[in-house]
Length: 279
Image (cartoon, rainbow, N blue to C red; front, side):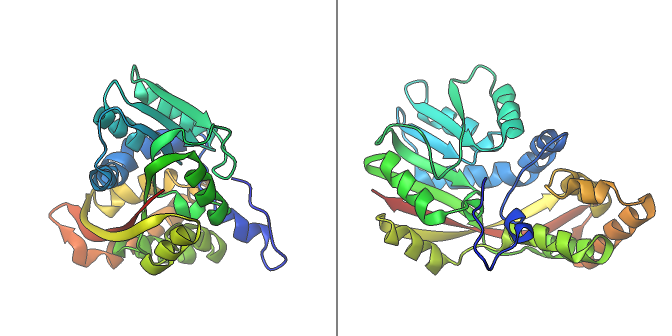
């Protein structure tokens, strides 16, 4: 995503507003983060939207396509599903994973989608909204693309979980405060009231915001932390650390989360806000 800078913001701050993966990042993201994190949130989001067969759906910031694929199974062969993302490597992974599913993949910025007005009945986005460079413009674009009576639904994190708090603290201690700020920014999201106001201000009606909480169950820190960080935009900063520094970071996370160990797993609460509005 391209971010226009004001005089008060620096290039470094702008980088915190992106989620770009390269190299092995998209593959690790799909194989590790999707089944443990994003696949579960995708199901929860789709349940809230009550998708119907034959609806036309656009999945914005689709990443490797977990929500897009689930959406296609809901709307069936008579439905139309498109996945949109600015990140070409993520879209390449999404296309490969979709196999024979009839899904169109679109590489585009969310603020200027070159598609006809009223093209969709539903627009959805999982964990993408807080990265949009111009949220009002993106919302206006979504409203333009929706047919009358269509609905927009998206989920974003409700702040930090115990796990992400521990990760960010360890990154700050063992890598740098700048890299930690970049990692923390992924969870610095609008409040429920802010979401409702932002959507209403751009013309969406009957806006509601739900809070969803899940218990997340992942492998122990020794296994999960290196996989998680290698699937993030800060992957290089972690992998370039000496082995002893990597181990120190992982051990700090493990110690911070000792109260969340159940057997040989980390089990902790996490939450999102789901915002839904109508045209």
